[in-house]
Every structure is written in structure tokens, then in C-alpha cells.
Length: 85
Length: 158
Image 1 (tube, rainbow over the protein chains, first blue to last red):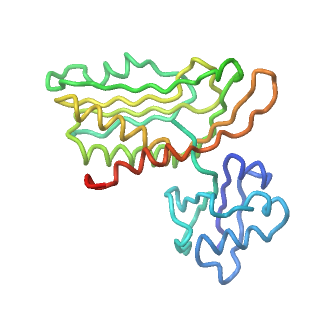
Image 2: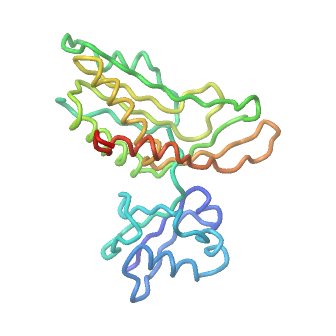
């Protein structure tokens, strides 16, 4: 099952695309695992995810912590801390 | 509060007076209305515009979740939150929160709460366009905004 990844703000700019569908390899169980795997996919990902601790994540449009399991996620969004308001 | 809060994410401007009137029209039980408007500053002439990016779908959902929490916490009689996206020039509106209640304290506190959480949890990002034509980059999140949101979850003893 493929998972849709969506990127915003400087995460989007550094990765160079707004979204993509990926097949997650076995063993990617949590958000932290996903960030580690993505970071190894090329230098644009390395640049975007250089400091994984600052990256905020939403699964199916709800904020989650990095320890959250991603099983069953249709849509996972990665973005910097928010600056609205 | 009977009825759902009004939450809108839109490119176009809003009319503060009209939004207040929509909450109070035909009602005699509301004793207090507090509105907060957030505007784009020019940063001493250095900024020509802000570009607001948002996460469609989640932006509405997250603000609705924050609004539901405010409704659970204070005795409100109306609540509206509107957030704009796209390019916004200095002097223009960015965000509006209107809270209505029987007595003023609930409306003041709910509007404050909504803004604090909206800043730290609603998926919006600001990019600066400089007056000299250069790209000012993405606005950095402030620790002060996180602290402002955190104070609502501290116990009174803290």
C-alpha cells in the first residue's frame, strides 16, 4: 500500500516537490523511522531533514509526535514549526 | 454553546463588523463580544508582503479542534475564526477571532486561547517578501508563542 507524503514551506522547497506517493519499506514503524529513511533518499532530503527534531508531522491531518506509529496512515505531512496567526 | 463555531480559511479579506453582526444578530442573550484581528506589519518599511502557505483540509480541521476546546472550556454563545492565505500586503488583515458570551471574561479568555493555539498549532507558514525585491525567507517560529500556548495547560499552582 502506498502512502502519500506531503511537504510544506521550507521542507517542500528543499525536497523540491509538494507531495509524492511512496512504498514504505518493511521496518518503518514510527514517524522517527520514516524521517530517518527519508533522509537517506538523497541530498535534497538530507538538506530538508538535517535536523529531524524540528520537523513537525501530521498523520491524516492531525498532529502527531515522532514516536507515533504510522501503520494505516493514508497521508503523512512534514513541515516546519507553524507561523500562522 | 448551541451550534457549531464558524471556521473559514480564505484568500479574500473579511469584514470585522459584519462578522460580529453575524454572531449577535437577533440575539438578546449575548452580553460581551471580543474580537481580535491580526494584521500584516511592514517591519519599518522593509516588508512588501507576506505569503501565507497553508495545509488545505488540516487548517480547517485543526482550527475547528481548537475552537471545540474553547467551547468546552468557556460558556460561549458564539465563536468565529477566519484565517487568510496567499499574498497579504502590510496593513491588510491576516486573521480574525470573535468570541461572544454573557459576561466579558469568558469572551476575553476564549479569544486569547484561540489565538495562542492557532499560532502554534494551525498549519500556516509565513514567507517574507522584502521591499527591496529580495526574498526574505520563511518566518521562524517563536518560542514565546509556544510558551503562550503552554500557559493554558499549566495548573494554577505553576
